[in-house]
Structure formats: structure tokens, C-alpha cells
Figure (cartoon, rainbow, N blue to C red):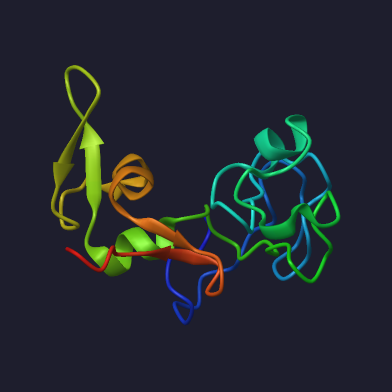
Length: 130
């Protein structure tokens, strides 16, 4: 189990797709790696020849100092915990729930709809007009 809190004492796990260790960069083409420019899946940006949000259309793929290393947990989970966004499976799709619900998981769908990617912080943030 990947630890969910930085100081929980639970062991961190390698990336489930490319096996990058915590703090290591993903293998180019890993389906889990996040695009540092838009917050989406880097693989999708790689397949289109570059991220449409990349300023100046610099080198591609992104240089290592722009890329995000594996943290030991699924991308966006930390932000969902911070924002209190959780969901559980429903009869059809997903529904919001409290973090105390035994079936609660980070609501990554809501994260990608309601939060915005902050390139400088390399993470999702709440929009200012919220």
C-alpha cells in the first residue's frame, strides 16, 4: 500500500506502471507521469508532439528539471486530501462522500474539473474565484 501521508510511517511504493522509485523520474512514456505544463497525462502531450500550454514551445519532451518525479502516491491524491475531495463508487459512476466513508478514495475526477494546474508550483490549486 502506498502511504497517503508524508510522515505516516507506511512504506512508499514505486510507480505502479514504470517502477520508478520515490524521487526518481518516470520512464519516458509512463502512463502515470504528469505533464509539468498542464497537469494532464504527459503521455498524451508526448503523443501530440508537445503540450499546448507549454510557453515558447521549448524542448520536447520536457527536460528533467521540469518533469515531476514519482512521489509514492497517485498524482493528485495529495491535493484531493487537502481540498477534502473524496468519492465512492455508486450504482452508476461515482458520488462525493466524506473522507470517513470506508469506500472513500481521492476524487481525481473532481480535481481535474474544479481545480487549476499551477505550473510554478507543479500542482493543482483551487481557483481564485472560489
